[in-house]
Image 1 (tube, rainbow, N blue to C red):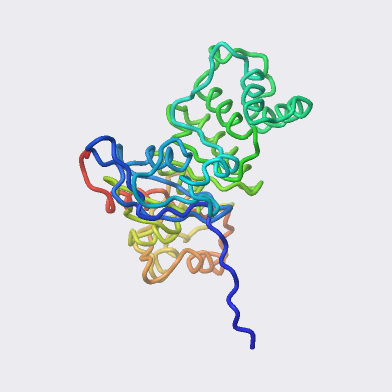
Image 2: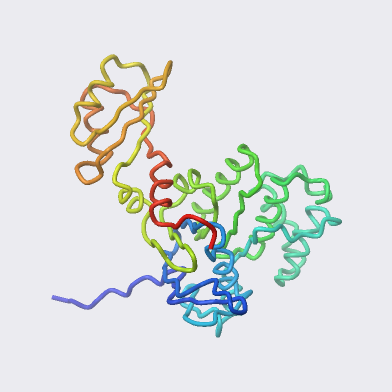
Length: 320
């Protein structure tokens, strides 16, 4: 019998005991976490937790004072050039030249990455299509909305086809429609095989988008693992069930299923909300029970409120 161990996949990010201080004020006090390749990973924490500092270290903008940070196995301190080739860093403040057009901005970033001139027109066309900005290529940046500027910033981040995207509050300041459209773009990038590491305060969207999550607070790691595991740790998981058609008696059916704790219905719609005791059952058992009872299910998804509860439980009140 061949018991040779299979080589373990190299994580996209592997951070160990990372520390950084601004003068005498520590921002990171030894955080440790990992991010799987080709995953979409949420990076959350209160204001002042150290999120932006961590992203700057991973992007090789800052050098760690202690500990290690590796990107696809490469140390950010000793292999900075190799790391930069594989990452795309989008900071929270859009650092673009407002007197340029959208096309000129993308062309500028492509030139900075050494992309030959003959390839740029097609590349820029593809990026404008991906971000749905084809109609605005000749527009000046100073005339664009915040949502459009974020799309241009993301497109500039993608010009060298990075494997890992480091996104610091990409949805900050956007209206609901712009946020939803941005999340759709990120899902498309994930399907292309990109690893996405995203910092945001909009927890509901992260719960729907991400399969992994890291929570930090006051410079320490509070959680690193799967989104499903974090939501389950909240104790009660809350779900929304939508039926394709009305079904009399479904509310009673739900109440009778093992592990279902609370059931409510939205007035005028076949939409039901229920919570589960995560230690006793899971959503798949409830779905099986509804289907066995004749329910025509249109959708079943976990509510983001579980992430809210987990976040509040793992972080401290007040500003550090």
